[in-house]
Image 1: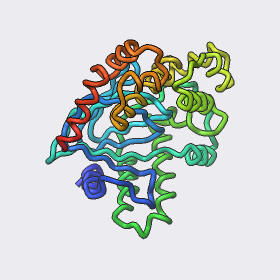
Image 2: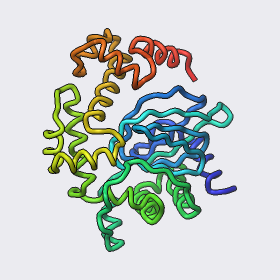
Image 3: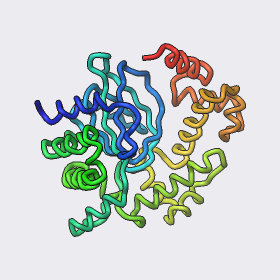
Image 4: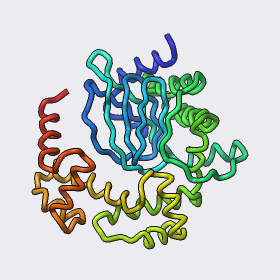
Length: 293
């Protein structure tokens, strides 16, 4: 058996809620292809173990399958779709949510690197043999929970080292430290998410990031593939969708609550992002949940 085969077997055994001793490690299983759905990524490294997925960020489309590793360095708004999955061969993905302090510590041990220029927050690359072998040893701790407290920190450091030395290195180095360009952009992104319903200006966003408007706009677009105001709009619409599903409120009321002044504009922009008007989209989502896997 290969390392990927071993990882697949471990992922099947442990898919579901994370082990409290490894709370940032999540294993996801999906038994059927899905429709395109909206999501907000958190900084994460993901190893896709089985199946295929398609992700849309801004104007970019990424498709990836078993044995490929995905790194997300910031809270990016995206659309995602599991496009290959079945009961016999489910979609399986191992996610480790990133701790920038771990990356910074490793870079210090590696004598550091110059801070890279801001680039895309999302990257996909094939996982090499050394990285897969480290992933295998890391998630195999789920079969030996008594060893987690001692070995998990060391194996996470090794995993991050392998990633830093590979195609994802530049992307991850953007995350290290509290005073990097990415940290400044992420501070502005958090500020936007906290105030998504307010009328915000790019000047105010740039001030939070401590950058000029032109530099902020350029770096934000390079990172997320959307402008700062488009990012705010996506956060509004994702929150509106969540409220429509969980609170059973009228679409117009939710639209006003998330910052829209016009019900027709809300419906129009909602359809543009999610592919259907609010009520039809929510009815489809609820039908899918009721139908089960």
